[in-house]
Image (cartoon, rainbow, N blue to C red; front, side):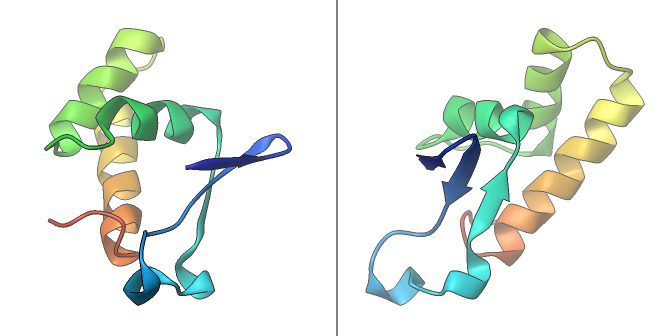
Length: 81
């Protein structure tokens, strides 16, 4: 993850991952989640739990948001399912 001004950007490492169409811009919450799980095995429930620990949000909302974010990361090739 890199910071560009007030935005956070993640791209895969290595030449095989160099595809700027798959670059993802993260907001502060997504950046917090990325930093919390980077280099670890995790799933959508782990992301949900992190959201519940840090933010006042309903569990259903946290679960939905965590699942959607993980799907974007998988689609971009940043994490494996």
